[in-house]
Image (cartoon, rainbow, N blue to C red; front, top):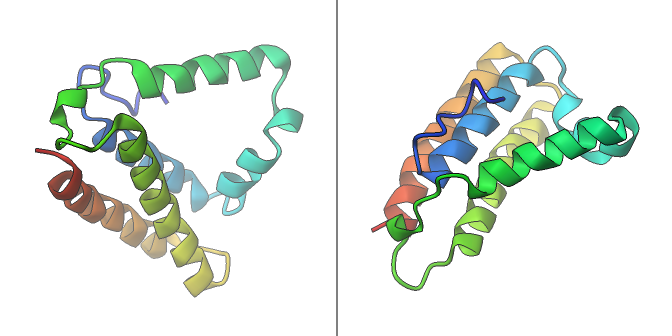
Length: 127
């Protein structure tokens, strides 16, 4: 995932959008992987791998984040939660419509929707 993230870019919304789009690229090959890994992470990873994953996640949410981008009265925690709900919701909605399996065109549409909603969230949450 380090290849997906531009660590010099301090825009957390863009970072989360890029991560989501990258995950979606695997969904075509492994359609149940996105939800499966979240549910069974304890079974899939050794203690050492879980520590590495947690360190990586910590870095995603803390390294080089510019909180001055946010509108007055909007907290970092709120930006994270709204963006998570939005990006995860795009994927879940596509699955609900397509019957739990997405083809390559579906994945591309969800990735494009991620970009679209990134722009909307940026307009709403950023100065």
